Length: 397
Image (tube, rainbow, N blue to C red):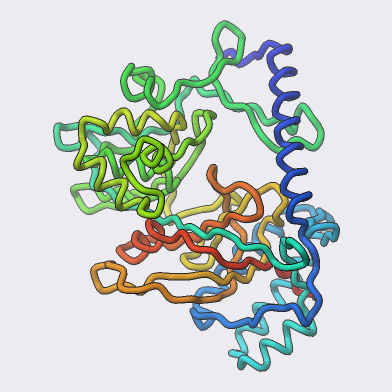
């Protein structure tokens, strides 16, 4: 298949994207610089999960760092640390954690061995808006039927992605489109894919599902599970998008007066669509981005290629945050009944890791917690929109 791209199209796109990327990075760094905190400014290190699955999360970051050149520098503000040192530091943290330390011992360890960073404003850590995501589960089948008419598509054969790092030094983004007579043009938007049959013969179908609203949220969440009629579960994961920008249907519903700002959640959006089926296509098509999936033998995997740990893995903006970093977060979580209904909200703090990103996560004041799957995860992911604080930690070897 001919994937030649007109050189002048590539030059223009690279130039435009470099300007956007550079501008975004300068804005984030200039507004809220990441600085190393003095020991007296450290947060109170308490973990509401009592260390559960923390080793698993940290080990995933260690595996990521080990795949990098040992001297690859990971930036923390104006400081940087080689990947090999971060491996040693996280290993030391795991060994210490496995001793079952008391709160006093943890505080002493952090004061003696941790460098703690935060994005600051007026010398204080900024408020970060925390949201959540999870793995939805959909009912499906391998063949199309009246009950299962909605496709979960694999990557189309005519989709082209161009790694800009191979053409422009320092560029970390990519162009996604399709080729038309030797020229790269934008890929089809959601409306065209849904209504024009453009993927017939171009993309294989992982499975056919029954719930179009659930499928849309699968696109938003990036990964999930499809439970087939015979009981088999397919783990479906983000592969690539059509390259078009993400637009929030929650904001769209606010702007048109359908929902109020304070009541928008995944659940209220679903309720509105189910109550107004005649508006479903209009609402979905407001977001032109379309996600294509692949299957994996295991659960959710983040953008670093590392398995995500429920409650521990966090998605941050890749620009300006150290990939794989040990984190400490403070925000709110729901207290739910057995059915996942929220009874109240309570504050919590815990260690976490920076292992993912998302289209809506932009700038240092946004963070998205991965909650896993199930009723509690769906409630936490759907309703969490709370402020908090975020710290980046380097353990000295």
